[in-house]
Image: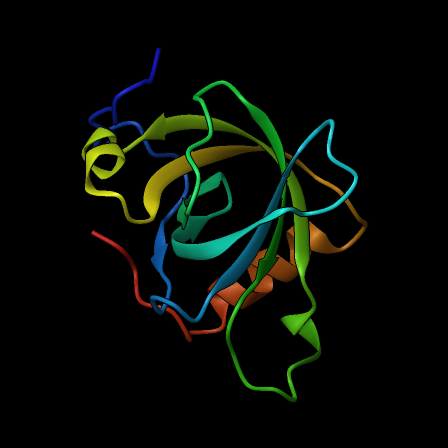
Length: 133
């Protein structure tokens, strides 16, 4: 069964930031995959998770590994990809009928490499991104 998007206005713990559409590349793989076989874009992100799109739907509850490449100045050493384990928590059901990219959201379970969480925090605090509503 496909989960629906919850009303999260009062449930957020972390500040959410808008990301430039089509400029925040992500890679996604399910746990049984050896490589990041899905590619897409992130819409917004926080320390707790992100909203993103892929060409293929992933069932809510699916555990995924994500590779996030945040946009920013090319000289910024903190622009290295950020890797995290996450759970898909909702999918935009209307997108399933439209035949285009499918919007979803995930909650981060943990960050994979030393420094990934700190790089994300640093990028979000940099002032490059606006707070999302």
